[in-house]
Amino acid sequence: MPTMEWTLEIVLTVLLAATLVQAIRLERALGVLKRDRASLEALVAGFNVSTNQAESGIQKLRAAADGTGRHIEEQLTKSGSMKDDLIYLTERGDRLADRLERLVRAARPLTGDRTETPVGTAPGTPAERELLHTLRMAR
Image (cartoon, rainbow, N blue to C red; front, top):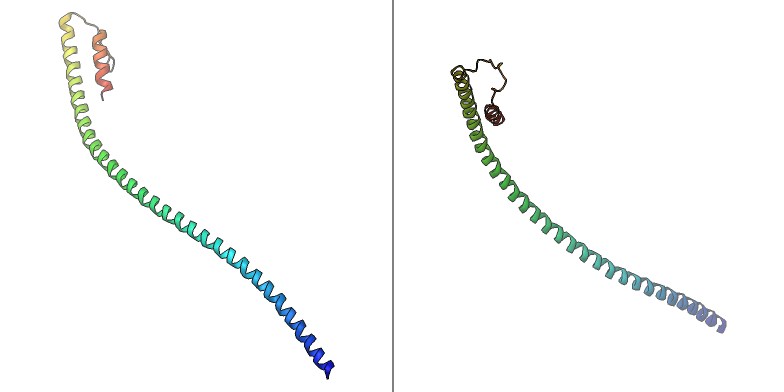
């Protein structure tokens, strides 16, 4: 029976050696897993920081957009009233230009200038042409 004991001890020794080899491999794998876990935790922490910064940036962007929207709305309101004022002034300027042109035409026969100015052209003197040009440009 001693051979049976020896055989049993050899088999147990081989199994113990195989178990030892597996334990070493498992210990190495766990070491890699621990390193990877620490790396993954650092990655998640960095991602959280980036996400928080992005959310903060979005909030600031929304605030800026709201402020700009209100500013544009105020400018549009002001421009609407200015438009009405400009329309009124333009119409008034047109009436004054027509009145001035009628007065100039009526005054021509008195000055002895009998040349007819075709409709749509400026009167003869440079001052009259400049005045009519300025009034027409204001339209």
